[in-house]
Amino acid sequence: MPEAVLRLMTIQDYPALFALWNSVPGFNRGLRSLDDSEAGIGKFLKRNPSSCFVAEKAGEIIGGILAGHDGRRGYIYHAVVLPEHQGKGIGKQLIDAACDALRAEGINRAGMLVFAGNHQGNAFWESQGWQTRPDLIYRNKSLNEDNL
Image 1 (cartoon, one colour):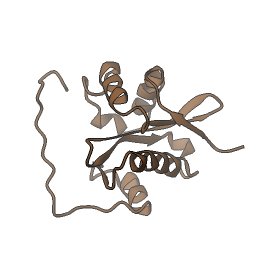
Image 2: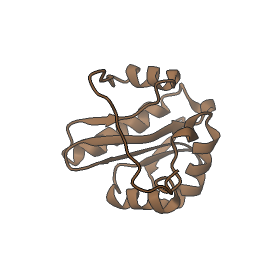
Image 3: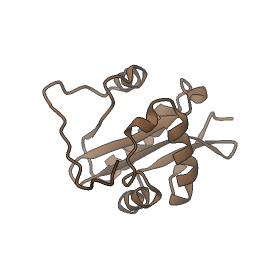
Image 4: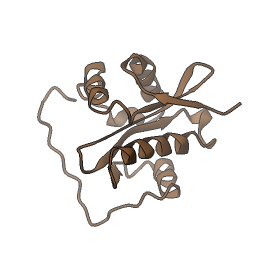
C-alpha cells in the first residue's frame, strides 16, 4: 500500500488543513489571519483549482501543498507533511504534482519563500533541486492591517 494517496484539494479540506498547519512546529508562524482563513484559501482554490493537493493516508490528511500562478510564474505555498510521515517521499509527491499541474498550465518557472531558520525545510527544498536566490531581497507590505 502506498504511503499516501494524493488528490486535488477542496475547500472542504480546510478544517483538516488548518489543523495540520497548526500542528507542525513553527509552520503556523507564516499564517495570516485573512489570507489563510477559510475565505482566503477558498479564493486561492477558486483561482487555482488544479494545482493544490492533499496527501491522505487511511482517510486522514497528512500533507498538503498550495500552488498557483499569475500567468507568468508559479508559486508554492504551505507545503507541509506531518512530521511522523516525513522522509517517506510524500513531500516529493506533493511537489511533483504541483509542478506538473503548473507545467500543464504553461508555467515554466516557480518560486517560493522559506524561512531562513527552517533548516530542515531548506535542506529538503535543496534536495529537490530548488535553488536560493542570494541576489534578491524579499519585500512585502501589508495592505490590510487586519491581516495579522
